[in-house]
Amino acid sequence: MGFGENLRKAMEKLRNSTSLDKETVKEVVKELQRALISADVEISLVLKLSREIEEEAFKDLPGGINRKEHIIKTAYDKLAGLLGGSAKAPEKPEKILLVGLFGFGKTTTAGKLAKWYAKRGLKTAVIAADTYRPAAVEQLRQVAEKAKVGFYGNTKEKNAAKVVKEGLEKLKGYDLLICDSAGRSALDAELSKELKQIDSAFGSKEKWLILGADVGQVAKKQANAFHEIVGVNGVIITRMDGSAKGGGALAACSSTNSKVYFIGVGEKLDDLQEFDPTRFLSRIMGYGDLESLLEKAREVQEEEGLDAEELLSEEFTLDTFYKQMKAARKMGPLDKVMDMMGMKQQMPKEMLEVGEQKLDKFGHIMDSMTQKEKRDPEIMNKSRIARIAKGSGTKQEEVRELLKNFKRMKKMFSQFRNMDEKQLQEGKGFRMDKLQEMFAKKKKFRIR
Image (cartoon, rainbow, N blue to C red; front, side, top):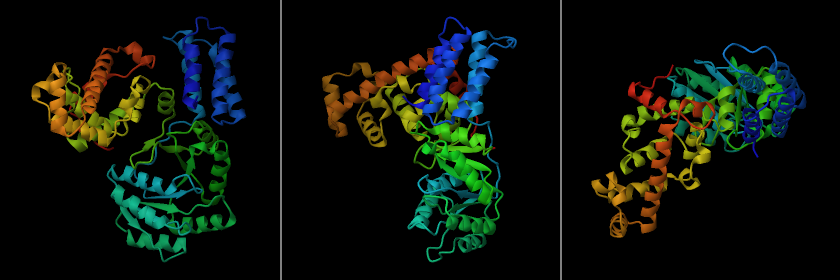
């Protein structure tokens, strides 16, 4: 069982309890302790959080809430505090130096970060100052091309500080420069000396440490060590999509006052998210992250010119189904989209695994259907399926798979629309009306 599932189990125990005496709260706290310790959070931090929850649980109630709501809110707030308070990344930094050891995706993160800022209106470029690792310069060049940002590297120069100086000269006129420094398997004297030289040459106020989610409590030691060398004032934690140990890294960074600005949640260049402890908790516990979903939806609507009102219309046809699937794919893998909606658990596995190739095949199948068949798939029979399969160059089983997925999705969206506010608060669904309201206002996506 993962970190988020363990936390949710503890919170559900509290939510479903009939009596709220001190013994019940102690049992819930023990569940939280197990979840946090399994995620590699320091024992001292776990015990501190436990004491705080128990002390707050039976204090005088704030107005407007009952005892159960108060204890749930207290536990949730304390957990969010343990994982670090909200810290917005600077909106218009001029330079960002990235530091960190091997294996945490520093070079890829440089590209992700460059794209993130470029989408927010900054003319951005990256400098390849990793002259130690073979092919690092070429890797960053390819990443920069995909991100459509500027790049400077010099494969013939082994002095990293000199490369930085060259980059600063060549990339004049850019709003933001991101420097990808070298790493090692350990922070040795050689790396320390090189980072000091790079730091001196680059002259950046922003110095961010890249850490892997599975580094656990060692995050504290690394954050302190790199801070002593260059003065780390921000952190990006990578590999948060598949690690149960992310809580340890987050808590350790928080304890050193190193603010976590972003988390990496996948391998694609768009898989970088601003870190917010409350939203993070909500998501890993399976309660969804509607704010992130709306952000993605606005972006896709702007970039692709999608008619979102049609996508969310009451009439759910095969055409609508295909467009929704396509729009969802634009927002990322379906399992991540459903995760943000808090509906991943209820989504059929085969639907979550629909890739671009299969989506294209669904499109070919639908191109071979009549308008009547698209509007009313209930009329499908053997002869129609055979004709459609032949016309689209697919198998009849694949046509049936499309129809099967359509029926499932139609049923799910019908359930979504019927969900009420109480179900949302209990983490059982998301607000379709919020999506409809957003699109009805015809807001254009603007970066602030």
